[in-house]
Amino acid sequence: MQPLVLGIETSCDETAIGIVRGRTLLANEIASSVDEHARFGGVVPEIAARAHLEAMLPSIERAVKTAGISLRDIDAVAVTAGPGLIGALLVGVASASGLAQGLGRPLYGVNHLASHVSVDYLTHSDPLEPTIALLVSGGHSSLLQVDDITGSITKLGATMDDAAGEAFDKIARIMGVGFPGGPAIDALAKSGKVNAIDFPRGLTTSNDWQSRPFDFSFSGLKTAVARYLESTPDYAKGDVAASFQEAVVDVLLLKALAACKQTGIDSLVIAGGVAANSRLRELAEQRCEKAGIQLRIPAPALCTDNGAMVAALGSLLVSAGRAPAAAAFDADSSLPVTTINLR
Ligand code: KG4
Ligand code: ZN
Image (cartoon, rainbow, N blue to C red; front, side):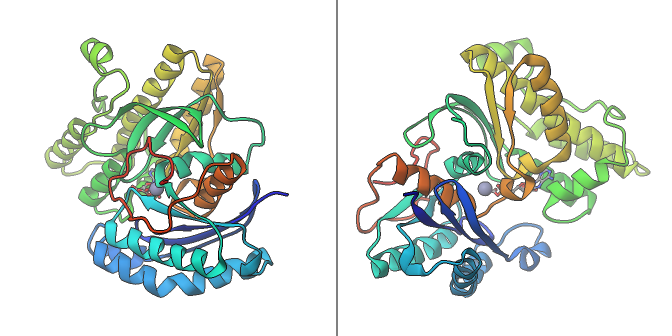
């Protein structure tokens, strides 16, 4: 029998509940406080935590109703234990442990980043591993080697400054085109030329390829765009958006494909909020096809934060016979990507 797992995600501004049976998605409810943060140009932790408290019970009720199950049917509860905003994470962990204890079911404290990657299992049934994973979100940008999504993730590289999503958000803020910036830039870029402005690709000199082949840096690009905007008062927004986006996407894919080549792994998963980017998806398809690499990118709605990904990883952990967490555990705002779940 496939395990019925409820997943709770509260690491940032989405209160998200997912319910899966095995690898089948039954419900994916998301209540976002993004509108309350928009006027601040970024997520305000206090506001996010308070919004999670308000949204938690109604979201669980909606998810249970959508899935057509009863809470008593659930075999296990999974919750994001980190990384993320500590106050926001704590609301999820406290709610999940109350639910698990009340139902007398095991509780899994799972890693947000591994969850982003594992959501692919809801779409593809053939084995994912071994695979290279390009994880690109608002808080993280990493290249990972995934040998076993429930037991072995190795970090090959990560950003040395901003995350890719953060770069999108910052440039969008400077251009005054809205928050979160990713979707805004993605839309604007459709009216611009990708090669209108030659923006720099971070960490791609021959020295960098020797010493930091799988690390990223977006701060130089951010500064170059800011300088361009300052010195070009009548700039074309579409061209800036398209050229900036191209610089980010180009370097992400260059390094992801280099990781595939070096490890001899011919499979790539792209996950996290930035994986919703239409140009990244398009260019990844072209380049992977040319390089003979099997590419998987979850549907855009499953790339940004959601509860289905937490439930998916929970379900995989149950099926693999991994032990649940001890009775009580703390959320960890800087949980390393290599810790897939808390014991
Ligand atoms: O994974 P996610 O939902 O939350 C974190 O774990 O951080 O990622 C959010 C990030 C934001 O920075 C947002 O601007 C970015 O993903 N994002 C995008 C797109 N949609 C969301 N970036 C580029 N293009 C998009 N279409
Ligand atoms: Zn995320």
